[in-house]
Length: 191
Image (cartoon, rainbow, N blue to C red; front, side, top):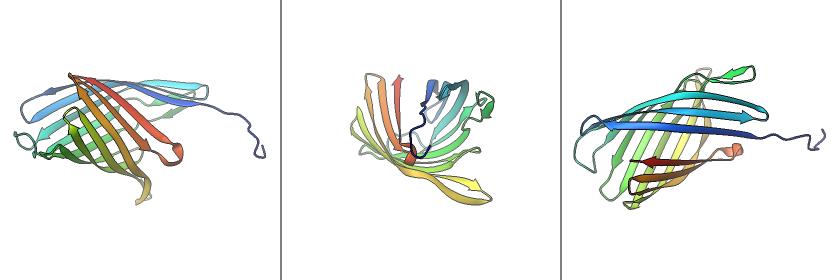
């Protein structure tokens, strides 16, 4: 087409998550969720559902300064099928460690293993300016395995905030994805 515009298309992804968690004691919590996913590229679209499961274990029972370990398996379910082409969901097994300091500062790190895609190591921090409002900053480095050697993938800073009022929460995150632009995530919660 010698540099002339020959057409365009749109793409979008939407996921609706319904989650539930419960405390099984002062140091142990479990949770799970069901998500309904739709994706469209140009005139083709696909729908599916998936399940997430996870747990948290506090390495002690007294407030701040107690490390917490988390485990999760996400995106358990069938893949997406666009017309005659199928693709797997990004199945993820994750383990993380969190530590909350008394001054409203939280530190976290995690490892996400994705058998079909990029695995990732992330570190982050959260600072609660007041109990209802927290600022967040993190760094993630995604890697993939190719021919038994590790190849660097997407990495970079992410930032966001959390707001908690009267048992409700609003969380926002923006993550750069290089030439793909930015990913923005909004989460609403009720306790």
